[in-house]
Length: 436
Ligand SMILES: [Zn+2]
Ligand SMILES: [Zn+2]
Image 1 (spheres, helix red, strand yellow):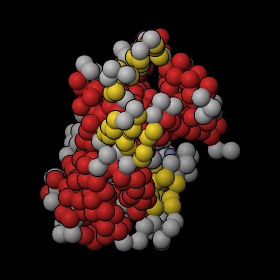
Image 2: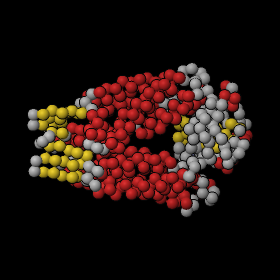
Image 3: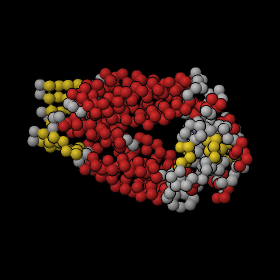
Image 4: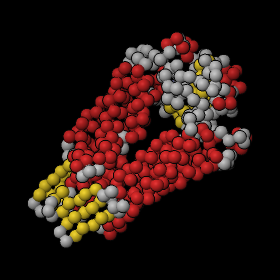
């Protein structure tokens, strides 16, 4: 297996080979063809991210042990923590939804912060232990499932909904959640995974180049002749986890990445079939998610089973039309748009359409980013149910629609993760049409 130095890489989104120049602070290297960020010059990345992760760990504890909000009505007081919401959903028989909410609001952020702290402590040694690479893969995955910002919006919507029937007071936990959003964003900005990968001891130690060879394993003239070619056309595979570029002896069974140990593959296996399967499942769940009630309210002489759409109308009627619009977009429009656009992307690949590839890759990135926001109503239901328990005067229970709703979000997120964007660029028609 021939290996290539750090600055020769294939774009993860379109597979185009390129040389990444030395970057100074604040500079970003983007893919020439699809615009994907390949590398960014960051100052003191590891120390800064470590400091931010320490702060995030403290804030995460505060966010989890203090009340998010309190309620007082008819002489009673109640308050809830994040875990209180999870527990209430569990007691109401919504086990799957409770587990998902716990995963997205407690488990995923905790794993992300703990693993980042461990990785950043481990890379102080040079070379860093190779398990830091495995942790980095897991922390990356948990980052995309840590939905603190969606939870924050869910708390706000819940506050407005409850404000109609009782006095609500924001708690310390809510401010901690807000601080956590800021810290997570700062960690993402300051962290440079390339620096971690460059310090790690390779899984296959024999294959690891000595320090000097990191920059000159690949003659410049060969790199120059590779411009405008995709890695696949040159018989090269780039690792899906660490980005290492390798030329395996046998392209049909490329083996494992010598740096991080992950199985190499030219393209994600069965990506089209799997993405279709996930999308169809999501489309099926979308129907009961919208038809079944998500929240059942019981008051003396009044009982209501609210679907998502009813909830939107109620919010609008109570005068908070911006929130009504947010819930409508997040809960009804985003999941549908995501299913339709992913289906379009797949169909365009299968019909071998060469046109508007750059637009398609933008659409893909967009739906990948916005998809998580459709969890909004699941969080709203969780916190409203946790707080409004004033039996026998008033109580709220989760409806059967919630679990289908959560299923749509999870399935479409899996579909976007499963999809291999490089297929958009793999059509037989050549690159000429892309260079305008
Ligand atoms: Zn690209
Ligand atoms: Zn790798």
